[in-house]
Length: 547
Image (cartoon, rainbow, N blue to C red; front, side):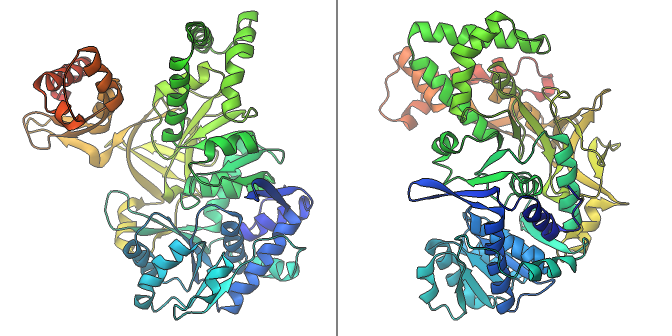
């Protein structure tokens, strides 16, 4: 595969190479229907013409307010071929939050998927002088009067039209041009636009493609929001580059069923996704017969021993466990998953080990919106639990004197949109300062230890990494979430959210009488019990780290 000049040529190279291969799958009439790369190019051509008809040109911004679906990609790829930058907007945002992004980016056109989202823009449209037109994905919305031209984008497949125009336009787009403004609040509150160029994304696509074993025969189920840079790069641009098939989940609620229908060959997820799978598996085991419970934990123990031994070749007992237990676990994921990748937030080591013990590896990675996003990732043949892997090829990582992770590569953003002072704060001599604290071991594996701004300094001058302490307490089965306080104080305090289900089990076992859950939480005996759990979970911490 040739190295693409920009995201437009990245797409068109695949269309030429694999014209008759399935590009996308989407649910229609109760089943998944597909389009080839050649047919999908026809949709991009129509979107390209539509943008041009409404005055969108190189350097303009096009907002996309939509759930994951083929039309999202049609608008984005058309804009990339045109040299315009797309501005993805989360569907969960309020009208005022959407207004800020549209106003700050100066978006000339907005693409909207459904009526509920259309009404959010209609509510704030009069305060957006730069917005000139709307493109909708549902025909019924075309007749709405919002004081702007409204056009309909058809997502159905036809033969490619004006492919030569797409190619000619894409050839003129410089790799240094902005491809997207992705709004992220980070720890500063007000969302700011991260400017990522074509070169930024392509550098990360090529480096990730060399690291993860993927190819044109792979099938991806897209359910993480395309507004998030992790799905944008790994679940979209990387899939386009290698010519894999992208299937779109109907919604987050239908992902378990869609996994069975699509049968993806790998899964991109965030920690919460894997936590939910683990919880469902343990619930099923708990509800099973004593024989099934014993069989599951026997297989789990075998898997743990094999993991601790470095995954030697399977013995007959391992093959039996695979036939009776591991295969059923993989079937929950569709039956064809070779591996999973976790990003977006820290993955608890226990979850990664649980999946590995049942025969499914989760390769945890690390990155930020500002780095397009992947900085480092575990991979087949080179992984270490409890770390976020080693840097991608062409990505430099160092730990500053303050313990902060800094990185330099072609994936590092151009800067924050219209915020030169904030850009200068994090970009110094080409190095992006992440705000995360970390360590690199002797083998090059990176581990995240906390956030630079999340250090609590007590009145005694002790520095406490809040997230590390919070995660220690959250390992207790009775503690769902923990938030630490103590800046400038003699000692730490914590806000504890109990695990409701476990606490109700405790109350039942102890025959504690109560009428409501709130009343249960107010009982002194329950408070003392939770305090004892905090003390037990904290016993390995230093004295100044204890709540």
